[in-house]
Image (cartoon, rainbow, N blue to C red):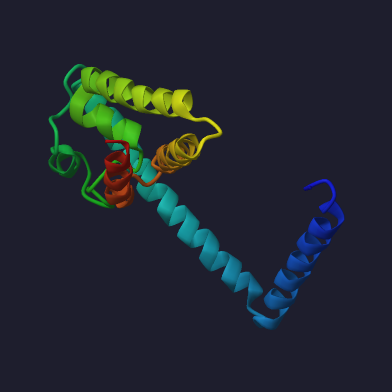
Length: 165
């Protein structure tokens, strides 16, 4: 069906690009300023994430086996950095590694591997199998997204994991 509609999809993409161009022109003469503000925001957000990643890696280097302790990321971050966001590492894998070390990360990976393997194994063309596959897809999307913003999705993860119980 997608092949059958490819001409219309291409037309829709072209119309969206033209609409975006018209919107940029209509936005006013300060288009360069808009791009500059966007670039500044991206640079700031990237720097915040880089600081979290660097801090998590430093914690993992200092405490490779057991980490700094569950829930201690913020306190350890404060000892290492004075700026940015000390609530999490902006990467769920690095955050788990920093707080629980290699031992905890292996347990976390086994848990996720088991959940994802079970989801794939039980997916089928039945109504239950389709629901399992949908939940599996949501978990994969969560895991991918949490590579740069895990803390804001913790409530979502808890809801998804409740579906699996």
